[in-house]
Length: 404
Ligand code: NDP
Ligand code: HSE
Image (tube, rainbow, N blue to C red; front, side, top):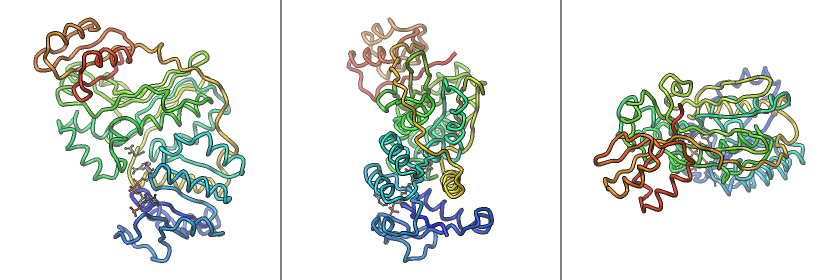
C-alpha cells in the first residue's frame, strides 16, 4: 500500500480524490499497489464537502500526517504560502516525498526546497504548478540533458486567458468574466494574484530558472497585469487585426537573460492568438530539439488533479528525475536591453499630458475622452517613469507590448 497525506480538499484536492476513486483498479494493476489517501488536512473540518469522505481521515492537525509512518507521499494543495512551506519542509525532514501544485511556495522557496529534497534523496515534484494539466516541467527537465534552452514563452494563467477571450469574443465586461472564472474554480483564492500577473510571474520564475539553469528571481521579471483593460482597449486592438494575451517570456542571452510578464498584442493569426479560454500553452526552444509547443487546460479541477497524480505515479514508479534539477549558472539581468513598441491608453483628456505622451508616440490611435497611442521602440520602465512623473493614477492607464 502507498499511503498519501493530502493537504487541502478544495478544487484540486477534490479532483485528486475523484480520479483516485475512478481509476483505482487500473492504478492497482499498473503499480501493483493500492494507492490510498490515509489522511486529509483541511482548515475547517466542519465544512460541508462536495464529495463524501470517511470522517475519520479528515483532520486539521498536520502532526497526524507527519507522524503517520504509512504516509510516504505528501500532496500539498492548500494554496497557503507560508504554512505550506512549513508543511513541505517538515514532511521532507521526516522522510516523505512531496507533490505540490502551489506555484507560490515553489517560486518563493525553489532553491531551498529543491536542495533539501535532493539532500534527503526524496522527490519534490510540482508539475501542476505550471500550466495546470499540461505536462511541461517533466519534458523540460528531460530536454535539459541534451539541449541548451534559449527561450521559454507562455500563456500561463487560465483565469487571465479566460477573461481576455470572453472580453474579446463576446464583448463581456471585465468584472463579470472574472466572477465566472472564479465560479469555474480557475482563480486563486485571492484573484489579484491572477489578474495582476503575479501567478504568471511565479510560473515564469519556475520555468525560467529550470530552463536557463541559473536563478531568475521573482523581482528579476518585469510585470504588468491585465486588471486595467477595458472594452475601449479591446476595440482598439481589434482595429489592429490583433488580439491580446498575457504572455510570460524568458530569453537567454550571452551571459544573462531578459524576463517579462506583460499583456501582449499579437496578430490574430499568430500561434498564441489561438490559445483561448482557460487553455495555456508553453513554447520552449532548445539548441538541438528546436521549438517545442505544449498546449492544454491551464486550470480546473480534473486537469490539475491529473497533473498532480502524474507526479504521484512518477514517485511510485521511480520515473522522475533524481537529484537537484536546478543549475548554478550566474546570470545577469539584461532587461534594460529590452525595447519594444507599446500600446498605451490613458483615461484622461488633458492637453499637457497629451503633449508629453506624444513625444514617445509613433501613432496616435485615439484622442478624445481617452488618449491611446502606439509608442516608438522604447523601454517599458521609461513609459512607467513618464506616467508616474505626470501623476497619472495606476487605474487610469493600460499598457500592452506590441509584437509585430
Ligand atoms: P482551494 O482554495 O479550492 O482549496 C484549498 C484547500 O486547502 C481547502 O480545502 C482548505 O481547507 C485547505 N487549506 C487552505 N489553507 C490551509 C492551511 N493553512 N492548512 C490546511 N489546509 C488549508 O484551492 P485550489 O484547490 O484551487 O488550489 C490548491 C492549490 O493548487 C493552490 O496552490 C493553487 O494555486 C494550485 N492550483 C490550482 C489550480 C486550479 O485550477 N484551481 C490549477 C493549478 C494549481 P477548507 O476546505 O477547510 O477551507
Ligand atoms: N489561478 C491559476 C490560473 C490556476 O488561473 O491559471 C492554475 O495555476
